Each structure stands twice: as C-alpha cells, then as structure tokens.
Image (cartoon, rainbow, N blue to C red; front, side, top):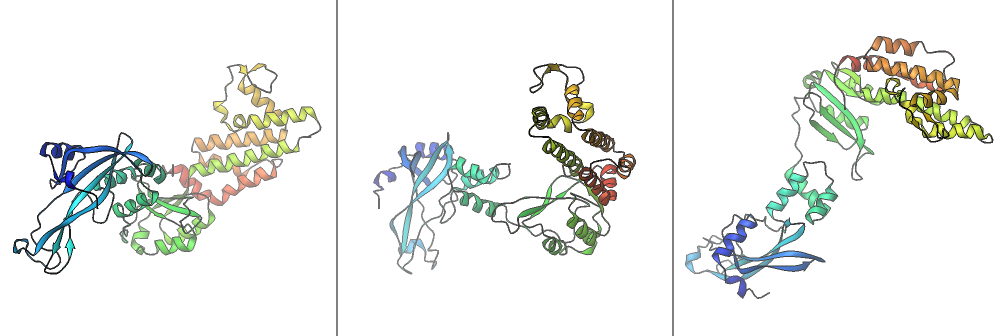
Length: 403
C-alpha cells in the first residue's frame, strides 16, 4: 500500500478550496497543502488530486457493536481512484484514501461511504450527472464518451440508471398519433425500429426496437379497447402493412399519409423516368451523350417546382458552351430532349401545385384522368396513390404531419 503519511497532514484552508473547486459537499474529505499534481494516467496527462476520507463510525454496520466499546479499531486505509468531470478538456482524477476499520467482535472490516461517489464505483456522481444531461441532447454516445474520457459502455450504463424503462399507462393513448420507422442500432431486435409520437405536443410516446406487425400488435393490444378507441388520428407513411394493423387496432381513428411521402412518391417516379430517358440515348452519338450529361447534371432543375424557376437572371451553365442563359432556358432544353419526359413533367408540376394548394379534389381528378400516352412506369407510380385516396384526403384536410 502506498505511504499515506503526507495525506494525513491536512490543511483546512486548502481542503475548503479544493472541495469548492471539485464541488465536493462531503466535509469528511480533506486535502493536504499540496493536493494537486500532473500525472500520466491511461496514456494521457491528467489532473491528479489526492485526498483522505476520515470518519468516526458510531457502530459496526455488520454486528452493531458500538465504537466506544473499544472493539472497533483503525485498520489502515483503502485506496481508490475516482474519475471526475474533465477540467479544461483534461482528464481529472481524485486519489482518495478512505479510513478502514476492523471490528474485533465480528471480525469484519468496513469503511465509511461518501455521497460524492457510489459504492464500488470509480465515476463520481457529478460526472455521471453531467453525462446524463448530455444524453438529453442529440449527441451520440460515442461522442459523449470521448468528451468525458469514459467508455461507451459506461455511458450506456448511466443511461439505464438515469432513464430506466417505464411501463406506459395502459388506459391512455394520445388522441393523435404519429408513427414512423427508422434505422436502429445493431443490438435492436429488428432491422428497423418503430417510433410513436404525440402529435399534440410533439413528444415521443414510445420507441420499439422492431416494426414487424406481430410485434406492433402485441404492443398495442396491451392497451385497453377504450384507450385505443380514444385515438382519433394516425399519421404514417404508405406502408401497406401499417394500414392493415392500424385499422384493426384503432377502429375510431382516421388514417393520414404523411405529406412528405406523397411528394416523395411523385418525385421518385419522375426522377426514375429521367434516368430511363438518359439510358435510352445512343452511346455512339456524341450529341446524344452531351444530352445525357446535361440530364444527369441538372436533375435538380427538373425536380424543382415551376414557380421557383428563374426566368430572368442569366448566368453561365456548364455543358451549355459557356453561354449566358437563364434557368428556364436550361429547363426548356432538357424537356426538348424527350417529348414523353415533357408530358410527364407537365403532369408532375400540376400535381405538385394541387397538393401544395391542398386541393384534394383537383389533385385526384388529375390522377384519375392521366393522358393515355403518359410513360407507363410513371403512370403506374401515380396511380398507386389511388390506393391511399382517403388517407391523402385526410392529409390535406388536417394539419398533422410527421415532420
């Protein structure tokens, strides 16, 4: 055991100063006149404090023998290295010598416990609390671990201790629910996770580590029928399996398709046709290959809403022979490459305009009366929206959105 002679020579003024600096409320911890030194720990240069925890026990915690009887004697010191909150981006540690006692009556040894650190733990309570606060923000566990010089597993354990899982109230569900899926971590049970949010306050209601139907059904069936009947609105994507299970579990709820996914369906369909046009161009024709590169480079111009196209400002566009042209002229040239693409573009822009204006009647009138000569792949993707006609009507009539 290291010699603790110097640590016993405590200085009251230094002890008060160091305790205030390290935010130690336990007055039993004292420090000598020179409590600080720079020391290399775990390959890093670290701040190193040395202190002593002294206390006179009232009795033995094992057998209850009173200290005044002379059966309890001093039995050396117990040494522990406690990690503190880093100071100026430098790891900081406290080497704490704790007085050990021996009970002659029962033969057990024991030491006083400090509120500054939990029993059998090397991380101080303030450090754990600081990590718990960081976990409330949008920061990865790996970044938090790097910032506080701890392992990722330590961050996970702190998360479990501070934010333990709670069983939801099985007689209550939000009246308006937002559901979606996202890519989870490797330790999740399913490939995709499932998130449930309250549309009224934007707060997360629960997160499931599996999105498969039998898992969702088992989760929601725990709630009473009365609670599930109280759900009046559900917003989701165009996943057909979700539509089946939500109608079964929530008989009173109106289903809305998230507006983002409707726009995504239109955009992907038109962009897919643009790629088809590019691949149909002859590779042996130099002019066709120039058109290929233009369609590839200016795909954003084709997907942009027509009212956002610039019709006035002229500038140099690469691949247009360094001519000063407007964005509208670039768009006109791209559409002139394929009449079929031009027809799809007009339909695409009309649907975007109707959807932005929340004119559900005009939107579906356009979908139901598509031109016969329209590209079949693009047409099939647009007609798919008719399967969710009622849900898209709800999306345009209600303000709820997963965004």
